[in-house]
Image (cartoon, rainbow, N blue to C red; front, side, top):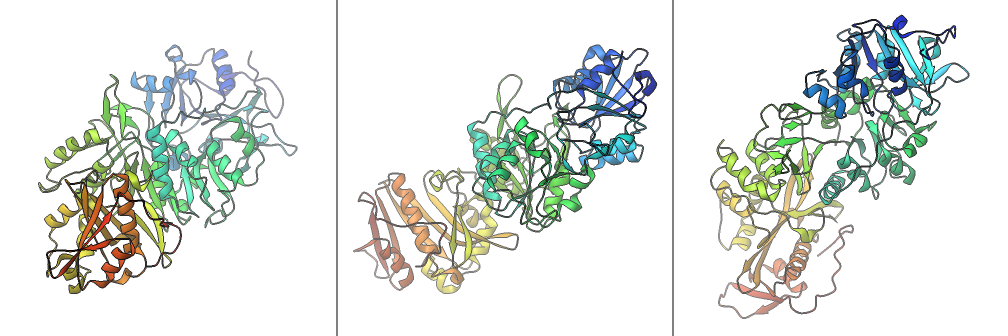
Length: 632
């Protein structure tokens, strides 16, 4: 006998009074899956067949999708999650309907997927008769509004959350009380690659940003590396333990948000009991329906909106596959496109895709997740026009405003080294990269774990990083800002052209041997090179160093900092001597070298001075702080 009763009369109810064969039911989402309610339905389903169960991700064993219940249930997943559902879809016993999370509610309200019943889990009613949808409002709210019948599992363990989370007992047609722990999502195991991705993504997050964070180990790693940030906010379809921890530490305080200021906004919570206890009655966290939280227009109202999502694979042009492995349907679209687009529309926003560079196939073979072209059968969820940044453990690829050729170079740079040559050769089949373009190692580990440093000169923030093959056009632009005097001082003759081939050769540097660094800042949304320093390694374990700074940025400390960094890296690599050849009339550059300890030696040229620095001596005590103004 079922435990269902009527909230109005307290009379017992049977399932066949509420459902009929062939009807469609909605099942509560994420950590608010009414498992006991579904178990009661299975136990008391006499005379019922072919019920379509539609739902998004459900944190459960999804027993209703098992083969033994095939006559009772047919699953129509709006997001594939869990082994049972994934197997059912793969075997043709279940369907997958791809849709944006923000548009699921309209499938119900527009009767594209009319609901005969919604099976949900809620908190007990308060003294006014209001139950809370608790940890999952997302599309549950729309299902409750549009289903003919609402059937609830009353769970005393369900947190009472704030926001648009309440449903009155009068809206519920049948209920049963079943106390059960809220399903928990255990913290994923971290590895070195994922930790490195977290560090790289944290570099892209500025203080005062508003975050959207998805589920999975990459997203957890990002949250771990935001502990030193300030005044972050959250507008995200979900929150996890990491968000709660950053709120407790004060890193997330929502003070700088420009939409829903002062509140962490989400549509569902999924994590440990700590998280569920944290949101219970917490006035600083508000849950709203998916059509509100995941609306790209509303997302964009937050300035500096950073959307961080993952993928199964990304091709060299930036196409993102995230719901299938080839033709094998694996997960779903969810809120990825909604938030990627919303962040792109935001003032100062950053849409980011983050993923490990490799995976293992079913035979255990290492494969690249950065691919020359999408695996046949794979579905492009996010287009090449949506994404601004792709991050792997090998760096950050900046795609915004890049040509297809520039994108391929950026993407190859962050692929696993084992696959870079193969990817470049594959690209050449499509004529995206000319023959003179080479792909050399571009990382400089000596710059630190994120392959770059931040400096402030004269109140302007700069990034010191390696030159990369995709900087070809930037270096051309940098060259054409120089006046005749600068060109004469740097090249010792009147250079009038920086061809694509020449620029390409200057940015295609094997950074393991030679060194090429640049200082960049931003003009609006465009990264601009303001200074370049490089050294060339010689077989006698010495290196020749040179640098050039844009005329308008001289005298601020950029040149001396470039030289200090190159000297530090050369010492770390065990190079014994640095030397430079400088025109006698280039007084500013001579001053920089002399201030750094270079000694003038006799030379053969009457026009140039030869300067050298012995790197085998004790390194001078130099201050090289990236957080303070520096002056020559």
